[in-house]
Each structure stands twice: as structure tokens, then as C-alpha cells.
Length: 186
Length: 156
Image (cartoon, rainbow over all chains, first blue to last red; front, top):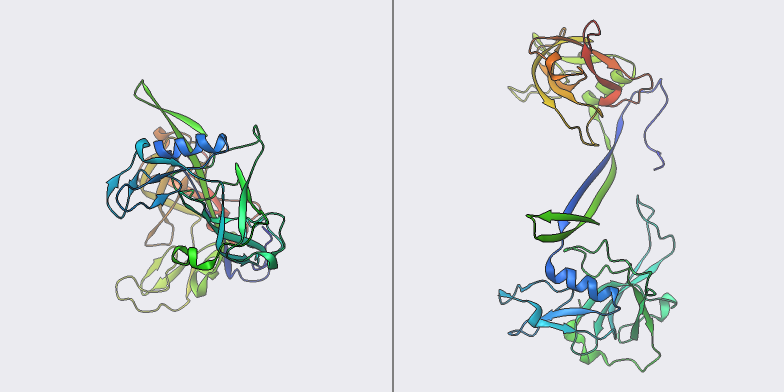
């Protein structure tokens, strides 16, 4: 890290300090997330669907927090790897510690085709930022077999799947009408 | 990824994560001079009536009244008033070998400060023992400009 604030002049008073907070921890990966990881290695997305409210949880959680029902393998479903951009954010990277991006980039929420499931914070590949829009049809781009890595996917990784699912790219199909997903935008 | 064995039958898998957060903060009118002193190879306390508080505080701990920036040099020798032996240091600890975290009441101070004592072995540690600060050659104005305390007379 470049030090721009702390005076290193031995004649000047010390007025600032730097601190580097670092915390390493281990987390036992839950059984549903282990199955999710195995599926990713296979180029597939799986989820769990609550039998009561029908919500689709991807990655699978092992329970439905709304109905407080335990979910297991019997509730697991195979998801489509194509869907629709419901909304997106353009991130202009500030060069804080750990930021690897230097140019503005997109992170999009993607509603997967039936049976559904929402992936957030997905990269839209090979597409100028001003072409990304809600309703855009996209398809998953997987890392090549043998190049996939799910080691970093833990219980709290959410939709961060970069080691296996690289992102999504436009299919060129006509846009999905906004009315069909306007209740699923977040 | 690591494998963790639970009992003798179940193999669980764990992910390891590292959270890192660097930041810079201002030191203020009391810790600023204290760290400036450390950089210059001196340990400063602050006068609070008849007593000297080390490390210096901005406020009287009994009344909460602001203290005048009236600093006085203390140490580098002092007395261990309490200690705890660290058998297996982690990567975040000040020393990479077994050491003591100790309260050291520096000569001229009325309160004790926490620091590491490099005593070599737990047998060399004793409440009431005399220690002295070992400063680093290259100092930056941080608490670890004192690398550690060592037994007086270099017993370790």
C-alpha cells in the first residue's frame, strides 16, 4: 500500500498511524453448499425451493427463512443457466486496498429462466456498459472444465461464483418485457 | 481448502477466508506525542496531579477531566506487575517465539502498560522482575517501535 498520509520526516511530530486489520477464519461448508459446489464443477446451478412459498434459494440455504421450514435434497431443483437482467449497477472503481478493477464495470441481477432463481452481482461479459439494460436476455459463461475452482465458495459466498461461472453474455434474443419481472427487482 | 476430520467417520470441508481492512487514523494531542517519543527512542507519560500515567491518557481516568499535555520521560526500565505466558504465538503476535504479555510499570510511572516480554522461557518470568525496553533500530512512531521488553541484565 502506498503511504501518502504519514510523515516519515524524523524531525516532524507523528500525527497519524496506519493500521492493517486482518482476520483469517475457517468455516465448515454446509451440505447444501457442498452439493451446490459439486454442481458448479459440473457446469450446473442448483437451488432449493420452499414447498410452501415456492421461493427459490440459490445457493441452497438448507431452510426457508420465511416459512421456517428445513429444506434438503428433496427440495433441490436444477436451474436454467440463462435468464434476464432485472437491474444493474455501474461501479466506478475507487482504488482502495484490494480493488483490482481500474475501469467502470457492471454488476447485474439476473432472474434465471423457470423454475427461477436470482443471481446478484453478475458480470456482463463482452458488452459495452451502455448496452446493458433491464430486460436484456443473457446466458451463463462457464469456465472450461478443468479450470473451474470452487474452493472459495463458503456458506456466505452468495452469488460470488467467479471461479466457475465467469459471468453472463447477451444472447441477442428480444428483451423480456419489464412487467414480467417488475415484482422481482432488487 | 482444508479437510477437517470430525470423529473418525465424517469428513467435513472448510473454506478459509481472510478479511483485510487497512486504515489510517489521527493520533490526537496525547498519543501523537507518545508515538513521536517512541520514534525518538523515548517513552513518555503524562502528569496527572502527583501521578504519572503511562501510556498517557487524554483524560483523568477518575474524574474525566482533560489533562494538560505535560509529558515526562519514564523508563526504559520497569517492573513486571502481572504476566501471562503465550506458548504458541500466532502470526499476529509481536514475537514469533513463546513470550509473555506483561504489565510493565516503568520507572517513574504510576500505572503499568501492556507489552511483550521476551524472556526465553516461562521459568524466567516472575512478577516483580526487572525488565527494560528494547527499541527497534528503525522506528516509525508506533507501539511496536519497542520491539519488546527483555529481562534487565540480559538474562534471556
